[in-house]
Amino acid sequence: GLPAPRPGFDDLHFMEGDFGPLEDQGDLLRRVEDFARSQGVKESAVFVKSWFSDLESLPVDKICFAHLDGDLYDSIRSSLDLVYHRLVPGGVIIIDDFFGTSQGPARAASDFFEEMGELPPLMHPIPPFAVAIQKGNCPPSGHCACRVDGNYYSFEWLRESDAFLSCTEAGRARLLEELRKPGENRSSAEKQGLLSCLRNAELMVNFLRRPAAAEAPEQSSELQRYLSCLELWTESLTRPQGEGPWKISTSS
Image (cartoon, rainbow, N blue to C red; front, side):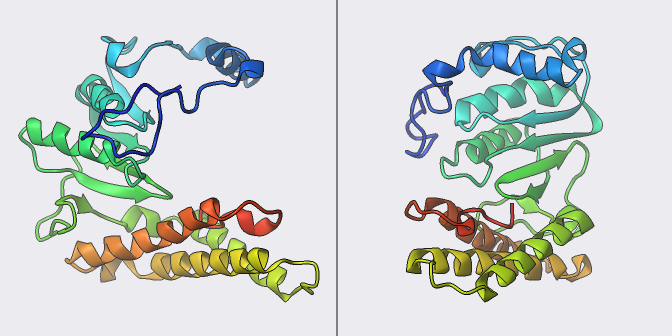
């Protein structure tokens, strides 16, 4: 499970022990190794059981791709200290939960690049809450920082993904089809949930369809449009418990 969050660096969202295995699920490391073995990749992977902050070295010297999913400030900061200098030029780091509720990963990234004496790198949002950073991919001339947090964002990668757009459009079509069905047995909460998910999908489709060439230098408005999609996505996961397909967000 998670270590204890650090007040002042992580907002009060996670608790110590969150995401730990349930008693009847067995050791998490063994389960991961068993899954890797079932997929035929056990012999090409190295598993290390450790807190992020206790890990002093890695079994590789060069990295071309890294996915950092630590949820908290200290975990992401320790991971960046270990990984970034091993990342080859053009390599990519994905920081999960960058836009998440705890805000620890975003603060860790900001502090890391500031202490390196570098401008914040160009960040490519990945739904729902991650960002991708490509080493050496600096903000182009004239690309203004977002006034909300001082970071540099580009949605070009996201808008170039035909697969993600197709997935979101298909989700919207399924929701419209579901809403056209007779709803005698559907509760008011279920209907409102479907409508909320539909609104979420429509927001995301409209956002994705905005041509990349039309991205305004004012990144704050673009970020706000993107985050508005995520706000409804989060709402669809936190509504009162109930049965029905509306519980599944279609923008993820």
